[in-house]
Amino acid sequence: MARISYDGPTAAAFKAVRELPRDGLTGWREAARRHLHPSPGTTVVDIGAGTGAFTTAFVDWFGVDVIAVEPSAAMRAQIARTPAVDVREGDATALPLEDGSADAAWLSLVIHHIPDLPAAAREIRRVLRPAAPVLIRQGFPGRLGGVELVRWFPETARTADSFPTLAQTCDVFAAAGLRKEALEQVRETYPGSLADFLGQVDTFRQADTTMRGLSDDEFVRGKDRLRGAVERGEGPEPRSNLLDLLVLR
Image: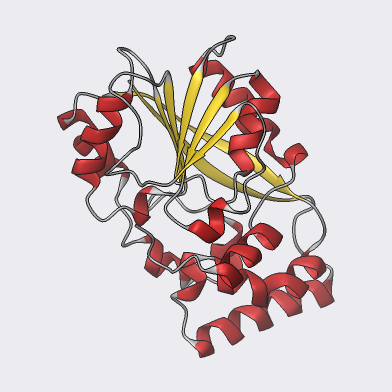
């Protein structure tokens, strides 16, 4: 499923530097609430759940049940188990759920890891109840101006440009019977300073798909760019990203 192998070291790196603290996800909490309309008994399937940051966030925010589907054993091992969290092996094209058993699907930075997006769209439609939403958190090609990595490592956009576009994604899901209902950009914030990010960037490269696409020279130039900004006291505080929330129903 993944463009990179989420083995033990990569999963640990992802957990350490890619997961956002809960207070940086306030924008996602409010955006998800508007489109999910959660209530007791709601079941959300978190597809490509990774280390479970949004799995546990949805449980804590909304009191819902979450089925976390993740193909990597190393990533699944990082997900905190609670009575409301059901962790299952699987991927977007083979979801271990019965027909019409979920009230919503959540996909966070995952569609570019899916080799057969049309098959995944059909499979997602299969497991959803009628009128259930699909919420996709994604950086789409051509819409990355608010992404922090692209500022310091502009060549990361080259890899991102190979991801499914917004139009392609909408067309694929429409063919499966799920049509665009909303599109908005959501801001998320990071703790720490640019200096903190500079100290983490080598680990970040290990855990990020677009960073792995950089040549060594491109990575060094970006790191130098980041170091120069730190030395000059530049950079926004707090650090943040703008990503798209695409809602299909």
